Image 1 (cartoon, rainbow, N blue to C red):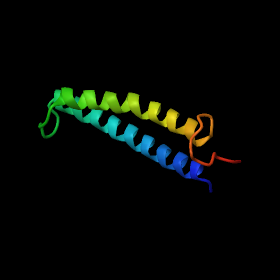
Image 2 (cartoon, rainbow, N blue to C red):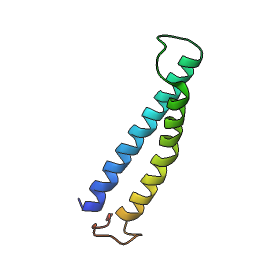
Image 3 (tube, rainbow, N blue to C red):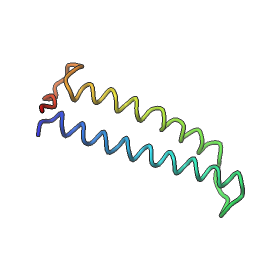
Length: 81
């Protein structure tokens, strides 16, 4: 495995986890608005954070993937098939 492969796998796992957390935060904010379950926290803040994660995680994944495959030159060994 090259350095690029390891970085690509790691950033993919981080991106999937971030999207999962963002979807959970959206659902939790909706529960707060409809008064289901224990109410606590700031629903608007959670919704903004979830939106930030949903937008920034795929963009970060794209940039790091370009580094991993050698499209943007860096010190990483590119992914080889």
